[in-house]
Image (cartoon, rainbow, N blue to C red):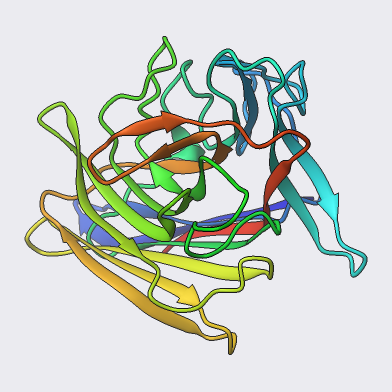
Length: 295
């Protein structure tokens, strides 16, 4: 099995009344995906994630690549046996729209994530999200003087893709690389029908972009109803380094997996620009595994 899923049902309390026992139940979740293989699902199928190559603004479910092989989600393995999902973008010889290698917790534009794909923090039930990722040689940590274009990243969001392919107001927690900005963390919330950036910060420690690096997000519900978000990045010594803390008033709501490698750069003002890798160039983000858990 490429994915381990544990759902342990725990009795919180028992109440004896008139000879009747009633119980309130809580469900613990522990989901690990280590990509022994990449599964290509149709929107109507059920699963843990959807690999969605998007070529010229058209999504191609059930395939590893779009017809031009510009956007691909591929299975890969290292000589040592490490398996991974490769999100790959290549030069588009006939550019006519948006290209994206997308690995999503919901079949975007068809349905918002539901059931096993949704992670909803509550009092006493924090959510922890971990990822092990690397980038190809095209990327530098600063996003300057390198070859890669657009953006790539991973984390969770409210799956705001609309039926026409546009992105609605986004609530999200992402680690992301953006051309010209570099490796950063982004926390946003959909407020008053728009995306409000609560933070957009460069990762403050040195990361070897071409080596496997672990990233972690912890989300706890506070008594006030706000969510406390803490971000961690593995440093060069191999230990987690706390990089950011953010308190999100009103909470973040339920979120699902999102990871991508695309041709669209953006900034903290929400200005977007479509780009195209140079002729003959291919840029890649590899994910060894992701691990989501909630007690």
